[in-house]
Length: 406
Ligand SMILES: *[C@@H]1O[C@H](CO)[C@@H](O)[C@H](O)[C@H]1NC(C)=O
Ligand SMILES: *[C@@H]1O[C@H](CO)[C@@H](O)[C@H](O)[C@H]1NC(C)=O
Ligand SMILES: *[C@@H]1O[C@H](CO)[C@@H](O)[C@H](O)[C@H]1NC(C)=O
Ligand SMILES: *[C@@H]1O[C@H](CO)[C@@H](O)[C@H](O)[C@H]1NC(C)=O
Ligand SMILES: *[C@@H]1O[C@H](CO)[C@@H](O)[C@H](O)[C@H]1NC(C)=O
Ligand SMILES: *[C@@H]1O[C@H](CO)[C@@H](O)[C@H](O)[C@H]1NC(C)=O
Ligand SMILES: *[C@@H]1O[C@H](CO)[C@@H](O)[C@H](O)[C@H]1NC(C)=O
Ligand SMILES: *[C@@H]1O[C@H](CO)[C@@H](O)[C@H](O)[C@H]1NC(C)=O
Image (cartoon, rainbow, N blue to C red; front, side):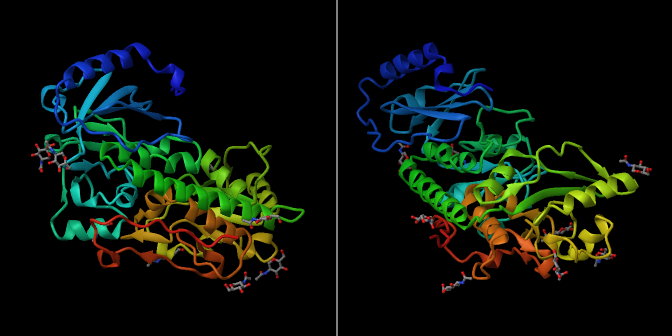
């Protein structure tokens, strides 16, 4: 997917501009676009501003989203749904969200940070990690819809992140996970801001999250002594009986930005079969170099996934001779009904909290309460997310949390 602005089909943009200028000529009620968002870090979308409309170029589906202000004459007269252009009337009066996918679907926390839960009308799965959304579901204000069904066509937009489905005209591909770094993912708040004329708010949230992330990263760099702590992201496939070290770029980036070092990139063996003595020996040898483990192993019962489970999975009776013996982490601290992790939602829109967690993991102060990570080497358990944990008016914006820094 090409993403540089120069790849923008200029002809198309000029054509849109002329058309829009003609359509809106004589419209009495033009919106003055007072605030704009400039995409600084994310690579997979760009926003362009006109007088009564905006265009989002979305590299995920290769389409241009023409966002037409509801006050312009064009709003009632124009509707695009072609292989290159889709149109939406903004600000959205209502919308629905695809919350169903193996990794939690569209992260709802982005909408919460903008204060948009009030116009959310439907979700495709109630397996969500947001207490306030759960509360709205309980109250019947948000309903569960069938995925991909005609039901979602009644809304001004239907946001999806699983692009592998049949899409109708109101579908919008909102896909922060397509980006390679934590901050690039968080910047997708500006994409939603454009649909709702909430650019100012989106910019504020992103600036605050980025400043917090940057400060924490500098603070961590200051803490690093001559040797950086070495971290392994690793996952056990229970069915295959094999371990592998995770190499997803955003995870490695978190470790670097937290003042740590990822296990040697020269380790390029893909899997370690615990039933194979040679593999097991090699795995234990690598673990001898590691100061902190992040165990990503899937569990249908996180509360019951303890240090004992981890040791059984790596085939060890005890780990007292390993440097990581006090530092074995999992990102399933906040979980709904044992299955839905906030890691796939809140952690994507507020990566500064993830970074703060990892800094605490690598340089423990004992003063900081982690958000998403728990240390199973210290017997830390999970927090069960429930609707009654919603402690604000759900229609008001969620205030981003900014951990102490410096
Ligand atoms: C446009 O949207 C705004 C905000 O939702 C609303 O107050 C206004 O009535 C809408 N105008 C039209 C013409 O639909
Ligand atoms: C959603 O908003 C659209 C206007 O964009 C309106 O036509 C439709 O009736 C609304 N649907 C619901 C279910 O509120
Ligand atoms: C990092 O250290 C530098 C130089 O000692 C200092 O100026 C800066 O404030 C520190 N930053 C943080 C975030 O602690
Ligand atoms: C792991 O090793 C055992 C014993 O050698 C073998 O039976 C099993 O098929 C291996 N598993 C995988 C996923 O290769
Ligand atoms: C907890 O996990 C252990 C294996 O580590 C298993 O034997 C036990 O049945 C589990 N307990 C529950 C309540 O699921
Ligand atoms: C943890 O490992 C260190 C050596 O790396 C050892 O000195 C210490 O006793 C171990 N602690 C526990 C609780 O096993
Ligand atoms: C929790 O999950 C179980 C199955 O995993 C399901 O039967 C139950 O309905 C769920 N409860 C809630 C409140 O979602
Ligand atoms: C914990 O916090 C207190 C007060 O904020 C501070 O004085 C103390 O130095 C902190 N401890 C560590 C280990 O950072």
